[in-house]
Image (cartoon, rainbow, N blue to C red; front, side):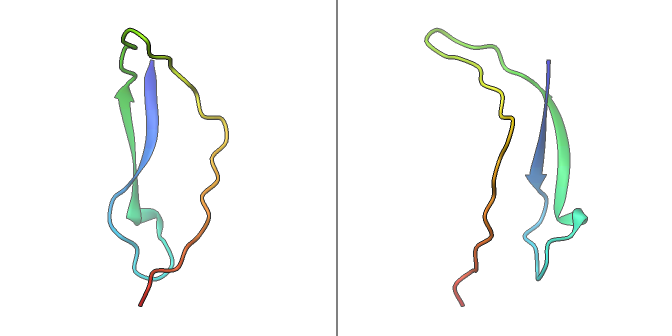
Length: 52
């Protein structure tokens, strides 16, 4: 199985641009004893303002 994740490539200055992010594809690690694997279906990211 392959895990696709969006990673912050560089900290946005102003409004985020597509170049501020990159897509990575990595193998899903095997679960160890006492671990479970979950799949995220929906993720909500709320905007925040940086302190000046």
